[in-house]
Amino acid sequence: MERRKFLGLGVFAAAAALIPATLSAEDYRKTKPDAWKAHTVEDAIAKLYGTSTTIEQGVTVTTPDVAANGGAVPVDISSDIAAKSVAVFQNANPESAVCVFTLNETSIIDYAIKIKMKQSGTITVVVEGRDGKLYSGKKTLSVALGGCEG
Image (cartoon, rainbow, N blue to C red; front, side, top):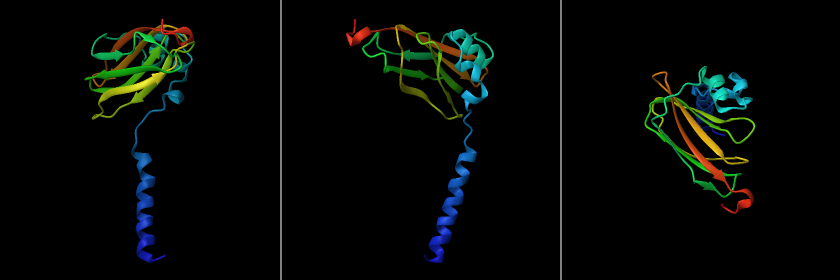
């Protein structure tokens, strides 16, 4: 191998090795393990953020009114709030916490995810604003048992 190619690959490898060190995502499963064991939405929010008091505005949660498949319930989340994190909770399964996204200053909250729900219930999304406040949105839906949509 030519020396220039070798040096070029070495510089590229060194730069690639530094990229993970610059990411600032928090691993909430390691830093807040009790939130993932909570059985109620309020308890999970309190264990994740220190309080369960939220302002119910500024967060839009969109799901079908009746989910045909509880194994893959589509959930759309959007908000214009400048946020540090977005957390999704539900009250249909034994553990309430579903996922948490860490955001940077330029992140746009416009997510489409699928979650698992074993029965009908409410999906709650909490946005931790950069102003230190917690904002939330909720959507109640029915899960069709047996895939019959009704």
